[in-house]
Length: 356
Image (spheres, rainbow, N blue to C red):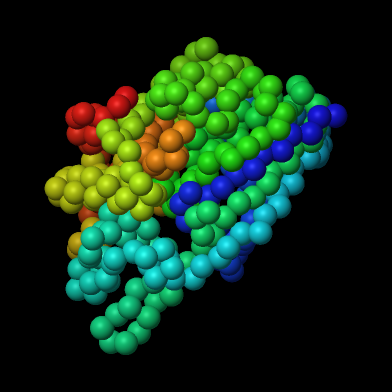
């Protein structure tokens, strides 16, 4: 058995916790995220084979279609999380955000409007009638945790690749696709893992090289698959300049994203591919047929920390279908096939002077 340890640090607020929404570190949440990123790295279109291999690596319910047997398998890897995290209740006040809630506009205004747009549902809202809507409790940036993995190399390599993808391509908790719960690696042992967890040199080149290594570790499928969100043909853009802190970085990309959405808000069907549900000014929702009410955005916005201690925003476009075949978007009696045209336009805007 082999033991791996990773010292991690939150570089953006993490909205992670149980049913009562109190901020806390939960091993089950991290295991779920590692499974998701493993599937994204794997990119396997044979769903039956994908699920069978996933159960062998992460545990779960194994089914034998021929004998119709159902067997519960434990994870072959032990995962432990420890950390003395710092919690907050009012993100605006405790992180020094310059934001005011405009009740008429149902939006935040102020110098940090970009952060307010991305974290809207997590922030406290003081209303004119004196009522106050509390914000979501969060784990403060700068909080550190230690993640330990114990198991055999044949299984650990999958956890290593998934953890790399979680740290450098994703986030933890609510709003993880909008800059929530982003992590960086302070240290890890042992170092000979076949992949690097601490950026060196030019970040964009380092990222591309280690993404390839992560795919190799899980045995990524050579055949393109669009049945679910994955990293087979992922597209990403890095900010053209560095920022001094996470607030500056997230505010910049938040402003860009907000302005793009606002100028295209009349394109009700096209904007829906950024994630469902979408509520428009008339109070009506864009939904999908077959009672599909929610669909995660294929666009991931996050913050990363450079070797120099500076910050970059990064935007990823995950490969895969937005809706199952034959399912259309629906709005006020009209229907339309989902289209990624607007996402393509958004990335074209971001690529103007940005690193690819």
